Image (cartoon, rainbow, N blue to C red):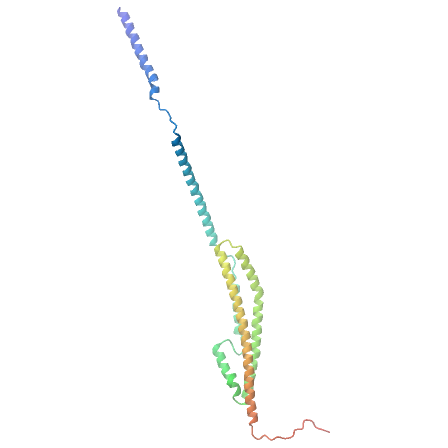
Length: 252
């Protein structure tokens, strides 16, 4: 073999070896590739886990909605009632009290009643001279007349409150039925109770004024009987009385 042939053979061998090295990665790469393996059990578990997490998120959203609604309801429960009849009721009570304070001669005062009764009624009606007893009788009569007048005034004032109370009651019932929260309903209920209390106070005032008038009249009648007995006693025991004939009409 000549030198030229040897060179050619070496060149061919080197070329073949180079080709083998360049082709080798292409031939051996599939042996190192990673294949995707489908695991049904693992997939199902992942789906269930995702579903649970989604359900938890929905529950949290619902809880937030409930809390927001609760805050809205609490806000409604704290809203005040846009209606108040307190000033009106206080004015009616003050008016009734003013009528009672105008009681003539004998006011609604325990000490004054006791003093006046001791000096004008009871045993005092049958003591003293005729002039004294006549003056006391006049005072008792004035007390009775004044008491009846006071009773009529109180009754008129209470009757005048009926229409106002009816209007207030209608407004409060309407406000209670349309209340947006617990506070408004409670305030409407409290004002209805206040209205009821005011009506009861009017009733007490009427009964007190009427009872006062009746009591003074009964006391006057009793005192008049005592006074009459005393005056008859004075008249029957008077000395120097001489019976005689009295001519009522002159005859012609």
